[in-house]
Amino acid sequence: MPNPSFDFFVEFASTYSYPAAMRIGPLAAAAGVAVRWRPFLLGPIFKAQGLATSPFDIYPVKGRYMWRDVERLCDDLGLAFHPPEPFPQPSLLAARVAHVGLLAEGWGEDFCRAVFHAEFAERRQIGEENVIRDLLAALGVAADDVLRVAQSDAVKAKLRADTEEAERCGVFGAPSFVTADGELFWGNDRLEQALAWASRGDSNSRSREAAIRNP
Amino acid sequence: MPNPSFDFFVEFASTYSYPAAMRIGPLAAAAGVAVRWRPFLLGPIFKAQGLATSPFDIYPVKGRYMWRDVERLCDDLGLAFHPPEPFPQPSLLAARVAHVGLLAEGWGEDFCRAVFHAEFAERRQIGEENVIRDLLAALGVAADDVLRVAQSDAVKAKLRADTEEAERCGVFGAPSFVTADGELFWGNDRLEQALAWASRGDSNSRSREAAIRNP
Image 1 (cartoon, each protein chain N blue to C red):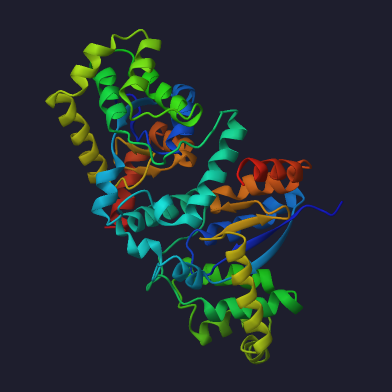
Image 2 (image 1 turned 180 degrees about the vertical axis):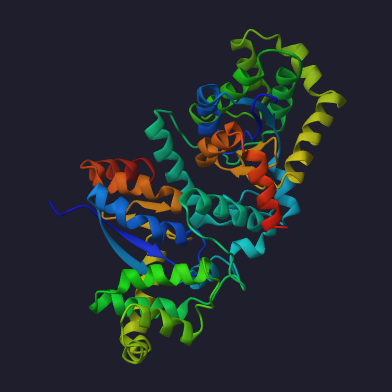
């Protein structure tokens, strides 16, 4: 039997993806679950549902709650949190660069965490190339090469494919976790439950039963 | 200093209100927090946001996830769960009757739990008067009297007032918890956090700081 694993669908513009990205490493290691980071874009998925932008912008009452909720969560976790301006931030460049690091090189996950920190702790503009250059430089990565590869057809196709696969898995928000047996968990507050699901041996049979009950 | 307390804004049509209603009693007792049950109606609040019905119906991808998520949660809690048909169920009558029990008599909370069980475990039609009569009878309550009071102007006004107060507190979904110092927590999965907030002594000062940071 393979080691437990799941896909971590993460979107750099997403507020709740920030605490999830900062928490997932040690929690997954403790649970013995291998995490595959899959940066994707929520924009196309929102559009397919008829949403022109973030639901937090479309429904301001919900948006106000979200800012306070994330602030409280980060407070409890000891994470700095300062809402970026504008919100949502354009996340396309960061997502492409992350895929370069995740595909072939060892700095992918560190870069993802660096993007979230820059965006939500330091209020930097993650859509700007010079910001991404700074983050890469701090990781000791040659930014020119990476930025060229990030704009290649192969990397663009990989980001598109991951976004399409997220949609096929039923993802409609971020962060989302999808286990090997196809269970979807949505939200930073479902991270522990997703890890427990992925690491328990009977998850496959439970999932089949569920599929029978909810055809 | 008064005992810690919070308001529990609960909507009988809401799926996530079901596990919250079943869990809140013992958890609140253990935390030393007094809970004021406040049945309210989400319909007017959704309408004010431009939503004609439940967001789970408007966004089917989110709806599909919700059914599976609630099923998993209830599974973990050992609660029977069978989605009602139709969804959402009309909750006006149950909410009015609950207010009768909560205002003047001792059976309000038991009735709330009985409604949720009938709706989500037994798939009964909670909008039908004969179903509500059955639930009252099982509690040893004289249904004729209660149903007459439930349709009185005073009870109608109380339900309207609680719905309006929920809206003033920023409530946009159910269940929601509002502490004495005005902190709003949304969702069954925030119940523990809301109890911790209500029972910790420094909550007032923390809230004032938050208000200063997020004017």
